[in-house]
Amino acid sequence: MDTPSVPTSVLMATTNEMLLDDLLRLAAAASITPLVEHDLHGLRRSWQSCALVVVGRDLAELLAHKQPDHRQGVVVVGSALDGDELFRCAFEIGADAVFRLPADEPALAGKLADTLDGGVRTALTLAFVGGCGGAGATTLASAVAVFGNRRGFRTMLIDGDPLGGGIELALGIERDDGDRWPKLLNASGRISAAALRSALPTVDGLAVLSWDQSDVTVLPPETMSSVLGAAQRSSDLVVVDLPRRADPAVEEGFIRAAATLLVVPRDVRSVAAAKRLVGPLRVVAGDLRVVTRESQVNGLSATDVASHLSLPLATDLRRERDLGAAMDQGRFDPRPRGPLARAAAALLDLFGLPEAAAA
Image 1 (cartoon, rainbow, N blue to C red):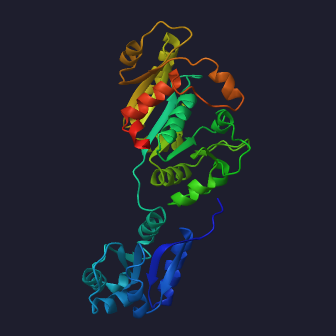
Image 2: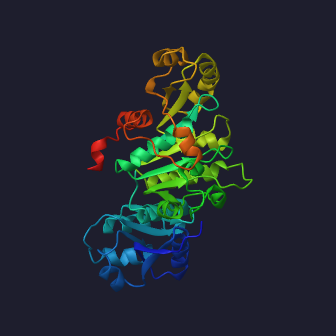
C-alpha cells in the first residue's frame, strides 16, 4: 500500500537532534508530516494550534518555567536515562502521557496514528460464516455492509476467505482501482486507518477489501490483525466474511468481532454440518448467534435450528428470487423491501445501528 506522507496537526518540539530523528522516523511510518519547532519560542507560538504536541524533555523543562496554559493532547518524550525528571516535567506542563524511547516507541506510534485517524473509533465488527457450503453467508455479509452504508454509517466490508468466490466479483468492482489483500501481505503492527481506507476500492462510499485473481491463498495473522485494527479505527461498522476452515488469521477475525453470525439453511443436513462448527467457534467467538435461511428442502423452523445448535437466533432469511443470477453478473442490488434487505435491517437494528442514524 503506497501512501504519501500527509500533513496533520502534530507538533514536535525539541532541541535534541537525535531525539528529533527518532520522532520524525515514527511520524514517517504513520504517514505524518509534523510541524517541527527547534526552540522554546516556536513551541510556545504553536502550543495551541495542533491536535497533538510532542515535546522533548529538554524543552518541557524550559516550558514548565513559563507556566503554559494547560491543554489536552500533550506528551513528553525522553529516554530511560531521564529518570523521574521526565515525569516531573510532564506534570508541570500538564502532559497526558510520558514516553521513554526506545522502549515506548510502539505506544508513541499508536498515539501518532490515532491523531492521523482523527481519534479512536469503536466500530461494531460483525463476522459472518456459513454453517455449510452455499449457506449464503457472503451474500448476507454484503447486504449488511451495503445497507449499513446506506443508513449513513461509515462501513468497511472485508473478504477474509482467499479461496472464496471473491466479494468484489459479486459487487462488480473487480476492475476498479484500489488495493487488494495481496498488496497488504507485508502489513504488520499499527497501520494508518486513513491510509487503508483511501487505498481501497469503494461502492457508493462503502470501502471493500477483497482478493484479486492471484495465487495468494495464505494470510498471515499479523496482517489480519493490523488491517482489522485500522478498519475498526476508521469505521462505524466493519463486516468480515470468514471461511469455515480454521487458521490463525481466520481466528483473529473471529476474536476481533463483537459478534459472529453463523448462517445455516433450515434443513437437516445443513444443521448437522453447522453443529460441527459450533464447538470450535465458541472458543474464538465471544458472541455467537445463528441466522437461519430458508432452504429448498425445508423441514425445520428457525427456532428448531437455533434450539438444535443451542445458539441465540439473530434473524431468519427468506430466499430472494433472481439475486444469485444478478450477483453472477456483478450486480448486487437487493430489493429495498425484499427478504435480504429485511434480514440485513434486522441485524443492524439488533446491534444498535438504527435507520434514524442516517438522518
